[in-house]
Length: 447
Image (cartoon, rainbow, N blue to C red):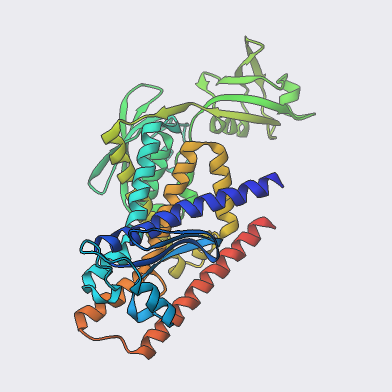
C-alpha cells in the first residue's frame, strides 16, 4: 500500500512540475506579446484551489485530475458563451498590457506562443541535466571486461579488459567519463548507422589502442548492449549449490574470486574455462586470506551464484561544463526520442515501448527513492518526451496548431471548417490509440 501511495505522489509531483513548466512556456510568451490570459490550470476538471492575479486578471488554478493542464488565452474564435466574452473584457488593461486577443496578433507571434511550451520543456531538460552535472553523476568506471571469444570486439583484436578513453563517429570525437557515456554514444552511432572508433587503454599491456567497429552489422539494440560489458571489481560468491563442481572443489559462500589462472577474474573467462577440459586455478580471498582452488571442468556449470560489483565513480562538472553536458545530453535524448516516435509508425515493436500513467508513476517512484540526482534525470527525460510528443503535427497538439497557423498565414486563407474538423477528429483518434496502447502495455507489465 505504501508503494502504491508513493507511486501516486511521485506521479503527481512529476506531472505538476513538467506540465507547469510546459504551460508556463505558453503563458510567459503570451504575456510577452501582451495577449490576455484568462486561466492557467495544472490538472483538469473540478478546481481544488484558485486565485486571481490582480495585475493580469489571470486565474491560477489547481484542478482535480492530474493528467495535464492548460493555458486559456483570450481568443475571440473560442468564446462559446457570453460569460467568456465578459471575462475577457474584464481583464485589467493598461498601456503596458493591452490584453490583446490571441487571434488578433500576427500569425508568427501566435506560432511562437504555441511552440513555447515544447521549447521550454527542452530548456528545462538542459537545466535539470546541468544541475545533475554539478551535483555529481553516479556512474560505473568506463572499464570493459574481456570480450567473449568470437564477439565483435574480440574479432577486431581486443583480447583483454580495457579502459575506454574516447569514441569517434560522424566526424566528431567524444571523451568518455563513465560507462553510461559509452552506452549513449554506441546508441547514437547505431541509430545513425555509423562506424565508430573506440580509443582505449589495454589493461594487459597498458598500450593505447584503437578499434573500429561497423555498427551497421549489428541488427538490434539487444546485440548492441552486449557489445561492451562493464568489468567486475569483485566476483563474490553468495551461494554454492549442493553436489556442484564448486562444492566438490571446496568453494564456499563469501569467497571472492580475484584471478583465474593469471588473469583478472571475469564471467567470460570463467565461462570459457568451464567449457574446456583443462584444469585451471581460482585465486580467491576467504576470511582475509589468499587461497588457490583447483577446478577440473566436467562439462557442467560451476554451480555458484555471484554478487558482482563494479567500480563506482562520481563525475562532477564545473558550471560551464555542466551547461554543455546538459545541452549535449538533451540533444542526444531528443534524437533518440524522435527516432522512437518514428519507430511507432514504421516498426511493429515500436508501440511496445509506450508507457502510460502506471509506467510513469512506477519510474517516478523509483527515481524519487533513488535520490535527488536520479529524479532530476528522470524529469529531464520525461520533459523531453513531453516536448517531442507535443510537436507531432496533429491539430490537438502544439505541433499541429503551429502547422495550421503557418499554412493559413502563408496561403492567406483559412482552412475550410470541414477539413479542420476532419483533421481534429483524426488527431483525437490518434491520441486515443496512443492512450490505448500505453494503458495496454501498463496492464501487461502489471500482470
